Image (cartoon, one colour):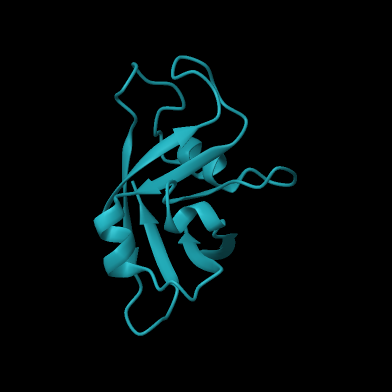
Length: 109
């Protein structure tokens, strides 16, 4: 599925926390409402991301933590995905469900 990158700062500023946002239809198709977290493969490593309650209502995204490593931002940098962009034109990435794995996805540039 196609997903968009978002962040907590203006589009022309490098952000501190980055997020991966999925379309509501993809959320409903590929995610189970009983999940409180998902596992995401990035470059062969698996990381856990909590799903906030708003994921199921107004904000279908998972994000870097408030503290600790900024996994999404670091992955974006390693894959030369822009950390800034023109207004209303965030970069896109691919998020694929891992076959036979509940709640596990793989992110690709």
